[in-house]
Length: 271
Ligand SMILES: [Zn+2]
Image (cartoon, rainbow, N blue to C red; front, top):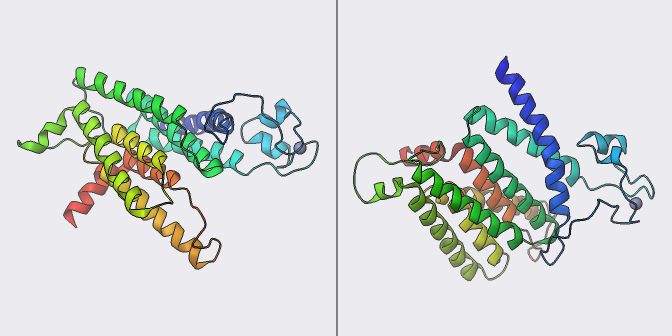
């Protein structure tokens, strides 16, 4: 019973936090710069009323439209709020009320913002990527110094070369380098579709999930991206020439790996 109540608390917390992430992601312009400003209607420029800014409720009160010009409000607003809430509740249910949950809430917030900016502007801004990397590297350093084991990171039993990656900082740095290098090769081979922002994001994911789980994150991202692209092509909602941002799929790959990466790897190795 308590678990359900706490999960509900995290759902509400995430919905409110999602409103803040919406505002931050919405403040990133086409050049990838952060320009913090009060939320306005993109069409008529009217400032949103406070009651219309309430997480989830605001969208319902405004009936999904601008109070002044009746332009529909982007569905992104309630979707991001709800997804953030659902993700926070899921992370709590998976890892419990432990301090490492704070790390996961930070990581998932970074990935949600990147997801939104890539969908809206085809940009993975360095103003989010680089601080994210610094945060993930600093966390890895502290975790290593404290001899602590993060529950989502892989630890290898026995002895040998691979157990060197049981050192958390080494695992994170190797994961970051492996992720960035692999995506860099993909960018070179695919010629378009993906950009350097995706390479940096793959590096960030590697720092978050470590080595060798970064491969699971990239694999899930590439499979998810491929499936969605195939569906869009078959249903003719997108043509061959249309751009599909790849960052959101990488973010999903990262989140799935933070939640179930170890199980997915075990499943793959035993299959
Ligand atoms: Zn308006």
